[in-house]
Length: 240
Image 1: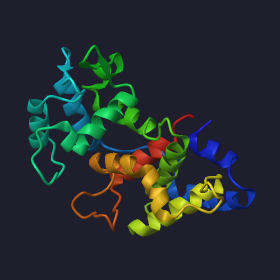
Image 2: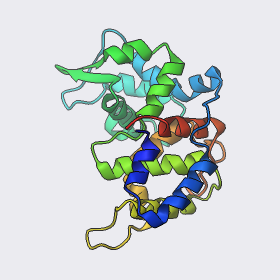
Image 3: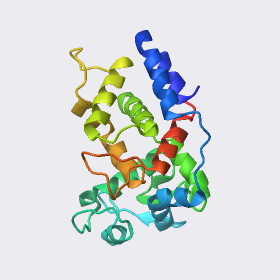
């Protein structure tokens, strides 16, 4: 069953027609047509991390972080616009979140204090197209069901590309979550900020992968790139 089909099975009947209209506007069944060069640009941070780990791995600090030399190297190699120069991974949130995500989607692992590539990571590091597809298909994965559902719905809004106001993204995300049963503990609807907080780490990851235009986007305007819309459609075409 596709991701979007599974969402529909849990949706209030009154919401199904509107949901299907959004699916049509988002063109989620379209073939994914994206040049390999565009895929390469999007997966570049992930390739850098996998290559840096390499076949021999990286020994982590006693606290379980990347060593300072690797963090400094990452801060110069990865153009993320981080406001301060960091030498500790705990002070470099983008790197910390990227490493955690690559572990969660089966590309990196930790064994006996060493950060290592998995067999899948080794297979995909020099295959940008396949790596792009793997990242798309696993983008919504989370141990938290609410985060997973919220990410799927965010990806649907991204695929639609109908607006760029951040607040509208958040409001529609909150409304969409309500249609599949996610509300506050007291039964009240989620606020737009509460809905966004569910996907904040995923949103930051998508932003660093180039789903949003880094040059013109901000915290108030999320301008979806062509590659970002394709990435979202690929994610929504994955199987649950």
